[in-house]
Amino acid sequence: MLLAAPAARASAGLDLAVVVDASGSMGRDRRIEPLLLQMTADLMARSGAENRVDHRLAVIAFGSTARVDLPFTPVRRDTMPALTKQIGALADEDLGDTNVLAAFSMADALFRGLPAEAERRRALVLLTDGVPYVRGDDMTAYREALRRFASAHFAKSDVAVDVLLIGHGAPREPELWRAVAEHVVPAGSTADEMLATAHATVTRMLGTRTVESMPAKSGAPVDTLVVPPYLEVVVFDVFRGAAGAEVLIFPPAAAEPLRAGSGGVEAFRLGDVLSTLVVPRPPPGEWTIRRRHRNAHVRILSQQFFPRGTLVAPRPADALRQYDRVRLAYRIIDSDGQPLRELAGYALSADLMLIGPNGSMHRIGTEPWPDGNGFRSTRDAECDLAGRYWTDVRITTDDARGRRIEVFRDRWSGFSVAAATRVDCRVSASAAMCLPVRTRVECASRGGGPIDLRQVAAGSPAEIVRAAVWRDGSPAQAALDLRYAGGGLLRGWLRGASRTGMYRLQLSADRAHLRPAYNVRFEPAELFIARRRPSPWLLLPLAIGVAGFAAFRARRRRTTESRQRCLSRQVREKT
Image 1 (cartoon, rainbow, N blue to C red):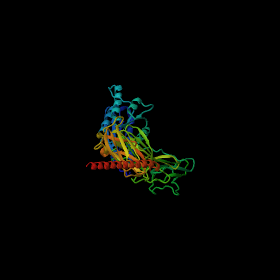
Image 2: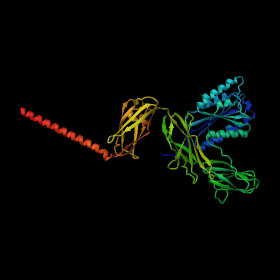
Image 3: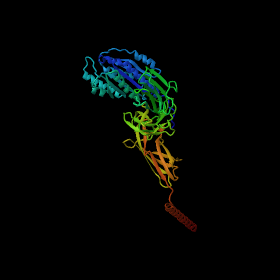
Image 4: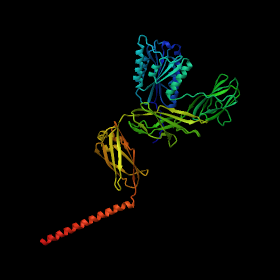
């Protein structure tokens, strides 16, 4: 299998609808909307660039009725200026009651207006104070209608719903929101709390993670700070403690501190005591910080890793059917799209989770690909369900202190499996000495009786079976000659497997001769047939038998000839 360089996955990504409560009960909390939406757009744009996918954002405001403030719009670096203007121009007004059902109906219409693309994920985030209210309606019946709508339109369409509940104390209407949403999160009541909660929610949906600031050691003029490997850029937040106090940052084994303008380092001054250093491709390990003031410290404000990756097997062109077994392969590249070269001392590992169409999760073991540019699964994955399969891949390594860190995560790769009816075929073979290998293939519907293979095959039933034969580990010049005997039975001979050795017979279904609605599973997947050199003691009875049979034939021939001569003499004497 060739691991080709992955192309940009423009069709993959997240369609996110942010639904904002603009009712009268929200009051001043509505002022957080522009900041929250701008932060969401920034996170989506960065995720799209890092993962080479296209995310789309929509915004719905609601009160007594719902309105679309922003239809689904691509969120990319080139669209961010226009998107920022649109977000800044959103109207801040009281829209009356809290008609969540109207907002959900509007969101459902937006999702249904998008093209059906199996490669994309869909999600909705609702920001509300948690109290639905529509003047004049029976609110008990309204809440039940809201539950039914979310189940019928979002759950069945694989739209993940998160609810962020604003306010002090315990969340209101907890049972309602747990029935409606996958995640229900108290968002606090201050702008900082709401933004932090929304940040965590959106990054989880995007499959990325936030990096906490890491303070250096205090109490000594020299501190250390561990910088992880595989960083595209690291941003240091420097607090000098007093005006004019000096803080010097030294990379591992460096004699000179970081300087703005050297090696691509950028510096930003924020007053007399605060500054920021942006360092591209920083060397990993323990960095040294020398400071002149006891209150000075340095934090890692943010860090961006450069490993990327994509699923390369199965390929998008592979027409997979239900009940196929697939081997997964994942390609690792850098931010320039080139094969990633591991850093010395920082070996990468891949944790692979396969998520089925029903949401089931299966951990799949991985091993490095022989060329060192990726990972492959150590076993085949079973695709017993039809639908979309997603992979959750985490690329990790250890930092200089042996702590495990995640340098990349991909939740956007996957593959689709078409529905098919399974046909189970039991394979058996018998190898009599000095005779061809007799082979039988008995096929039946799954859990049922024999199946007529003429319904399954596109052509002759015998053409369904494709055989591969190895002798002592090498391909063998042998052929399987089968004939259809009816009732799901194929029988025949494995010819060309008469030499001594260990033969391995592997059968698979030839898709060119198999109707699309079916899939064939052969059990066992491999048959082993031993052809041993006969012992001389075993050949002796055979030789005696052959000699006896030859002597018998000779005696019988002589007797027949004698009788014929006697008859001839009698005929001559009479004449």
